[in-house]
Length: 200
Image (cartoon, rainbow, N blue to C red; front, side, top):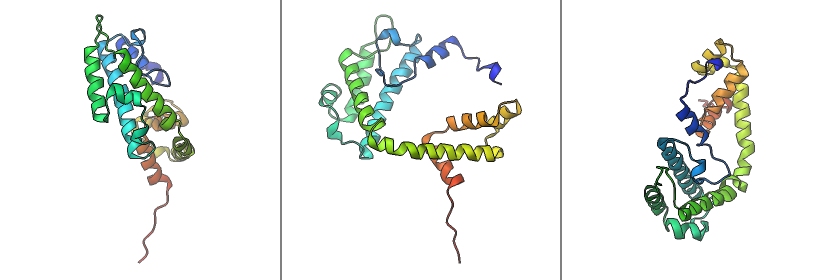
C-alpha cells in the first residue's frame, strides 16, 4: 500500500507543499507561491478563512475581546469583521500581478499577518490553549490505546491497510491523524467516558 504512493500530479504536490502554514507570514511575496493559479487561490482563501474564523471563534469563546484586536488591523481591513472579508477579497482581486499570481497589497498583507501574530500570541499559544494541551494529549492517548485494544473498531480502510501489512500502531496513528478535534472529542466521550445508568 505505501509503496504504491498516491499517484499525485506535480501540480497537486506543489500546491500541497505551498499550502502548509506555521508561524511564518501567512502570505509571502510571490517567490513563495505555488506554481498553479488554482493552488494560489486555495492557499490565499484558506489563510483568509482560518484567520477570520479563528478570530470569530476566539471572540465568541471570550478568549479575546474584540476591542483588543490591533488598531492597525482595523484601520486597514475595516472596523467590523464582516468588512475584513470584503477588504481582503477585493484587495486580492485587485492585486493579481502581471504574471497571474494571486497576492495581497503590502498594506493588507501586513495587516493580515499582524492579525495572525495577534492570534498566535493570544489564542494559539495563549494560556487557555496551553491549559487544553494536556487534555488533548489524554484524549489522543486514550483513543490510541482503545484502537490497539479493539482493532475491529477501526474503520475498514485502515483494517485493509493492516491486511496489506501495515502495523496496527501505524493504522491507529493514521486513523487518529484524520480526525477533526470535534470528532476526536466525540469519539472519546463515546468510547472512553462511562455513561450514567438509570435505575428504576
